[in-house]
Every structure is written in structure tokens, then in C-alpha cells.
Image (cartoon, rainbow, N blue to C red; front, side, top):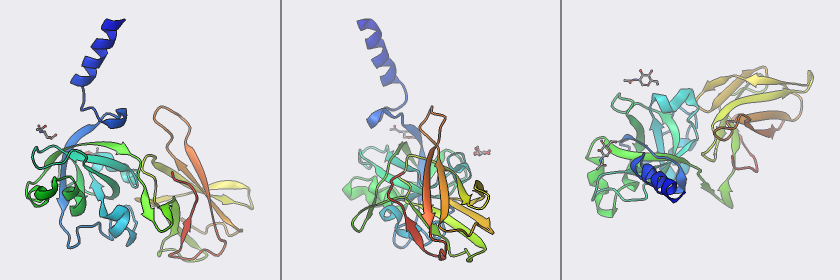
Length: 256
Ligand SMILES: *[C@@H]1O[C@H](CO)[C@@H](O)[C@H](O)[C@H]1NC(C)=O
Ligand SMILES: *[C@@H]1O[C@H](CO)[C@@H](O)[C@H](O)[C@H]1NC(C)=O
């Protein structure tokens, strides 16, 4: 019995980089994109728009194709730690995915970080050096994330995008996902036929429907991928007013 336990521990130590919380960390490389303010940008492929600049205080990232997964990656959060000794700190940074990007064109560059995020991985005096190094080795794992906001953390929200036209074109982007669940699909309740209609995935975290139901309120169902190994998804209903407004953000009370 004792023998078995010892063997298991050794096997773990020899395996993939261990990380806190027992989640296996993956290894890859990361690059960064320079910008004047070091924050995110307004044109990220997730469709967060202007909000994307200051999202998660500018600790944002673009991910390469395999992780991007046609936008499923939007809103997922990762703890990313670089591995250059003497340059990188041991905690790394917590980033949220807001964009798609292949860095140097190889899929091994998993992340293209904002400048602030890259520099957040450095020990205090080495932030500039880290930006001069080109692709750096990293390890990363999925984590939850919290969005600071006035009066507590921001909860999951649905924003009616500026591309929407009341009443005949409803386009929504899902904001402030808590990082650990993937948004699989969005449906809207047709109260007349009493059935759910799929809202087609437009791009990133944006879903859009022509001629949406007009009964009050407009009820959206967001389905997230459940925990690993569990078949069932996680569902959440969001009610937006019958007379929704392009550009308006509708908050929920949940963190998901
Ligand atoms: C990168 O990943 C994508 C999607 O998984 C794949 O189609 C592509 O061939 C990969 N590119 C390289 C250079 O490996
Ligand atoms: C850092 O990560 C890169 C990419 O995964 C790897 O090739 C390299 O060996 C790592 N360096 C150290 C010191 O662990």
C-alpha cells in the first residue's frame, strides 16, 4: 500500500509541470503586441469592442487557432507564467481571451499577450528586457477570473451591440464571463410558439438573429459547457426589455 503511494507521487513529479490547484499546466510560447497604452484593443475578434481596451484592466490575450476554436475561447481565463530565470516572476499573470492571433504563425505560440500582461510576468526590474526577448517559454492553466467594477465584481452581462437595429436585427455580445466555462450557444424564447429559437453564432462572443421575437420581455438562454467529464451544460436565462436599445448592456446577477 505504502509502495503504491510513493510510486504515484514520483510519477506526478516526473509528469507535466505541476501547478497549483492540481490542474495540469500546458507548455507553449507567448509573444506580445506593442501598443501605446499597453492595454487591449477595440478590434479584438471576440467582438467586445471598446470595452476590450480596458477589459480585465488590460490583462488580455489573443490565442492561436487550436485554442481559439472558432471563438469558443472568448472569455476564458488563464494563469500564464514565463520560464526565463532571473527575468520571470513565479506567479505570472491572469489573462482573459479577447482576440484570435497566431503570433509568429506557429501554433506553439499559444498566446499573444497585451504588453501589460507580458510585463506582468516579469520580476520588477526586468519588464523591458522581457519585451525584447521574442517568443518566451510559458506554462499556463485555466482559472476563473473576476472583473473589478464599481460596487463589487462585474457579473455576467449581455450587451446589445451597436450593429443591432430595433426591432428587426438583434445582435448580442456576452461580457464578463467568469473564465472557467465556454459559451456554447444562445437561444431566444419565442413566446407565441412557446419554443426556443437558436440565435446563430456570428463571430467571437457575438450572436445575432434577424426578426427576433418581440414579446415582452425578450428572454435569452445562454448555454455554457459544463464541467469536464459531465455531459450536461450549464444554463442561464437573461431577460432584456421588449424595447431593447443598441449599445445597452444588461447585467445579470450571476458569475458564470
Ligand atoms: C494550427 O492549428 C490549426 C487548427 O488546429 C490547424 O488547422 C493548422 O494546420 C495548424 N498549423 C500549424 C502550422 O501547425
Ligand atoms: C521554457 O519553455 C520553452 C518552451 O516550452 C522550452 O523550450 C524551454 O526548455 C523552457 N526553459 C526552461 C528553462 O524550462
